[in-house]
Image (cartoon, rainbow, N blue to C red):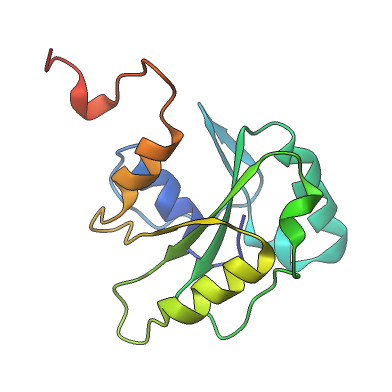
Length: 147
């Protein structure tokens, strides 16, 4: 979940090992084990309720905050609204005007205890998220055939 242009779809592409291309998310997309949501759902009160419903389809909920955002849409302690693990993800860490400290404080204020820092275009930090999400015995795509 995250505001429009926070990098949700780009991160989804990076997590799936796809070529990064701009694609505006128009509706909630299910990709195997990833749910990608439009930013408008977080930015609009009535649509925001749908995010709570979709969180029940996930084992882990990710709250994204771009390091270039001028404000946060996450209320304090919002993570208690779902009975799932909620992680914070700071995106666009490579930008010249990045303020990762501020984005981190916003996610901590929202209730995120675990926070990742990513540059989806270069892949920096993406493997950390994948390792966190790895289930016992699961073979990651980059490990296939290395036994």
